[in-house]
Length: 184
Image 1: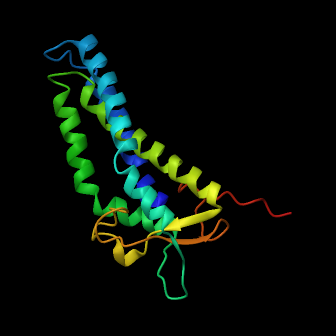
Image 2 (image 1 turned 90 degrees about the horizontal axis):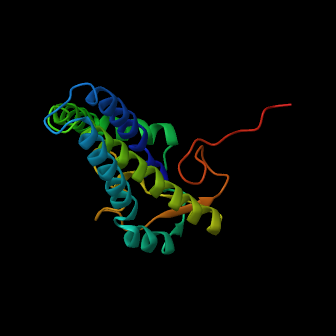
């Protein structure tokens, strides 16, 4: 589940950083100082909102997680991330374009908002990772319960989560890549 949540964090963060960097160049209608201050406020509000939204639903699904069965379809981390990014590429591109376009009115604010949304997703994945470490189980969403774009890990179609051991799969708690020890 944390892999799906974390899949959008990096594209949102980097497109937001790039859009904010480019957005500082034009002075805009409000001026750079006001734009950057407004962007900082939007960054904090966006990060907090994304990190806190639907926490109750995630917690309820985590409490009711069942052990993964023999016929549950669980996919690798790389496949999940690729599916999410392919399913949301036009949304990401339009958000980036909107952030760049808004820099002519309020410099850097749109880009900083995008970066804040990415940070919020990263914080939510870290929160899920702490729950996974505490319960010593990885939480998975069945592939057939995700939406057609590969997202919505706590949507209406998700009836429950599946749990496996902490060492199962190629994802670490929190959705990060599993670091393997070097072969000796």
